[in-house]
Image (cartoon, rainbow, N blue to C red):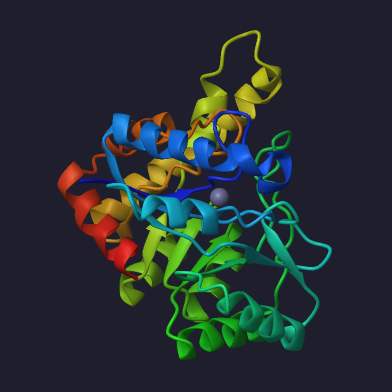
Length: 285
Ligand SMILES: [Zn+2]
């Protein structure tokens, strides 16, 4: 069973679609095309990472009549003024976060997504956007989701962000760029699941010479190499690692992105069996 634990069905010029960019009568056919792409690629389950238009809720409805298992947070939460405006709802403070989460829960998300940090710079290796939520905001929001019976996926880069997510009780950590050995030990102790999303940087590093992304090739290759070596180390240590492609990101198409990520993880020494076992756990969270 091939499972992708991190896609964005509402993003990207390579297959995704935002609800606001499409006429109502085209929405269902487009969603059916996405289901067909996953069927053709042999992907049986995917977990969405949300987008501002909340199209996951539409794909989830349509997927019920298909063989694809689809889970979605509908929209993610990010700290006002920080990274994430195309992925969901901005949160001003804890009170606002709880209020917005309660409102989202009325739409029955399968889990909650919190964007804790920015992304890595495409131009300068190792530079990352700041951490958005404080430790107490992050842990209180996660506690609230858990009390409502929902698991929490946390987008976190840099050791600082990863440790806040870990100690706040996140169920999965997404991306984790810049991860260090202390984080890996803490991940192993907690049993948390790490979704390293190698494909976005790996695919930019492999883009052709006419791609507008070619100027980021060298930096992307450096991130990819560093991340692969940490994934290899994590796997050898016994950290739980799940396949998540971040499909919908630039140069990571829905469907093919899952196969790309699988290839990168197998190169790190992971096995399809292991990825299936952890993937099933993530889908059932
Ligand atoms: Zn993502």
